[in-house]
Length: 112
Length: 115
Image 1 (cartoon, helix red, strand yellow):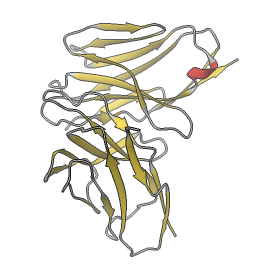
Image 2 (tube, one colour; image 1 turned 180 degrees about the vertical axis):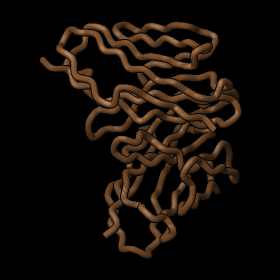
Image 3 (cartoon, each protein chain N blue to C red; image 1 turned 90 degrees about the vertical axis):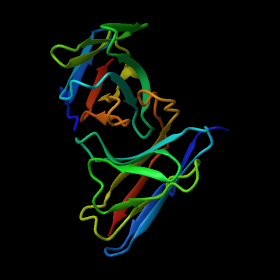
């Protein structure tokens, strides 16, 4: 089955800096890669996703890149703000098992 | 108010007891999922269902059971066979009209503590 590894487990940045979270996956058949944000005490919510026919996708201050050859994808947050502080999860799925396999999460702390 | 509702929010159980966590959605989604969240381990898939009267095991199904008798409902039973049941349980749903899972919509979760 799919295995998704996520690094780092914790990340602390100064407000205004950029943050990068990286994930690798094992199943070459995976073709959908979403990122979820979970604020303290709240439910996870989708912030951006990418499909395997696209190499990069941007939405304002966040972007995701995908390297299918190397089987890794990354989340980039620019101009970080205190409200970006949360736990971020990457995930992967394919058409074989129609359910997401999540990474272990990254706790991002943006220092004002 | 559309969404996905889990109950109870907090549940305490004695060892050896079975408990059932409720998950209801009014989003008309075909697929539903149960995940377990433990600190530092992300979200691990317990069971999922793509259609009524059908469900599949996830990565950590042992000690759990589910049913999908109605499109709106996907209850999870934590049985006494689950060795370490204390955790935060998240239910989710997605449209899943073919292809990938699409966006998952999560409930607020149920925190189970075994005394």
